Length: 434
Image (cartoon, rainbow, N blue to C red; front, side, top):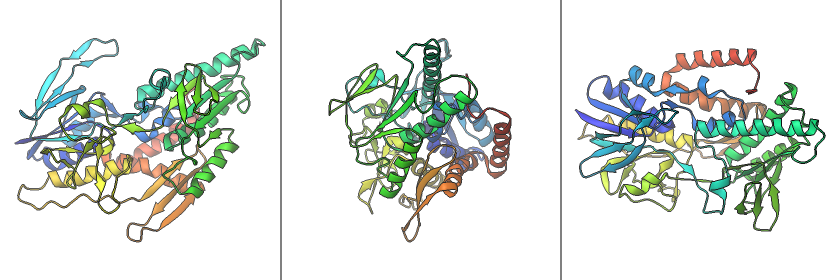
């Protein structure tokens, strides 16, 4: 019985493990193994809601062990340290508890087929001080770290203002990167600070004492969207009090400020870097071709040209679409489509013909807080773009997450969880207050 190892339990990796477990694992046709450094899964596109305090991650996390038991695959907790392709073994580091104690030792796992689904990490583009003085949103832990620092900064500034001090009585948040993550976080923060004031967590004036700024190198926010939508999003953020600085390049990040190439100093109590992603460092240690962003290059079968038994999907991979001549973007819908493609390919018999992977862009949706969203929908056949906003866009945005949950648990469980979360929202504060 062949062993298929999936390294990384993100959106693509976990959906693939679930599909293969149902089709091959339960029937005993293959051994499916999922490896991830964390014991739980959280859908990465919603990390900005954790950072703003809107969403409690524990209510939306998926226990890998529980998912594995229900869907016929095995779960191994630990960080992938390297791959020996000659002997077909993958090295997994020890799993440690929160206090640093070793729970599980380092291990070496054999494989017949290997799927790399590491995801991506923040790309600081070698900007001086960016890695040292910026927070990121690559994991739930980092999102929680941002939320706690933001809450503490508001409370400390409120205390100073109550005491009559003017120094340090204002909170400055600078978000570097005007893509989806930066825009969505800025919009959520503007609502969070108002909600915290309503619950008397702080006494700051949300419009005057908490300043959220976005610095974007391009001339427009959301460069991947239609310019009309980008301008609409900028206007909406402006109505929320968010300062939008487009056409601005960061030169250096200090502990208390962000300096741009024009010499302008943007005061910052907290700097959040959301300006781009790259493949994790382990991608460069495998002896496989990578692009300039450290992403593993794959062919039309999502295989590495150097090793037909190694596949890569999601943000850690680079697949150039032959029709457009450009690499597919690092989006959740790409990881989902690649997972569904590999689930079908790996379940086929060895002598069956394998089709090429074809990416279909169905459009993009960006949240602008709890009451607004913008986006575009693309027809699968005509390719025509339809711009959406308001309630329609907000509803479609929420359905993206429900689609992911349904891929993991099925429709009935997804519907039940949706009702539970809706009811919980009616009896709990809209944001975490501590």
